[in-house]
Image (tube, rainbow, N blue to C red):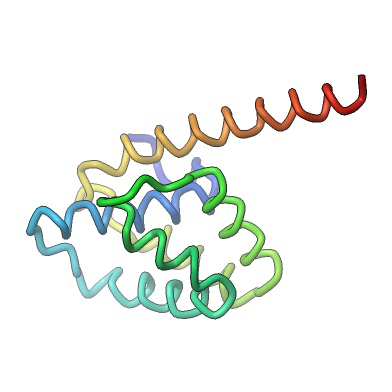
Length: 130
C-alpha cells in the first residue's frame, strides 16, 4: 500500500475510521493504544461539528456510507477547526496501516467515490450553464 502521507488527509482519515469499524465488527481487536487515543480525540472533536457524520461512520459496516459526502464533511471540519485538523493529522500519522488489512481497499473505494462525485458535479455545472 502507498504510504498514508501520499493520500489526502480526509480520505485517509475516513478510510482509517471505516477500516477500524469493519475489523472490529468481525471480532478482531484493533484498539492499539498507540493510535486508539488519536482516533478517539479526532472523533470527539469531529462529533461536535458533525454528529450525524460520526454516527454514519460508526454504522458503516452495516449501512452503506456516502464516502464522497463524508470526506467533504471531514475536510470542511478540518478547515473550520484547527483542532480537528491537528487530530486528523495525528491519527493518520500514528496509525499502523498493517493492522488494518482492508484499509487499502477502503481508500480505493473512497477515491473512486470522490472521482465519481466530482464527475457528477461537473455534469451538473455544465448542464446548468447550457
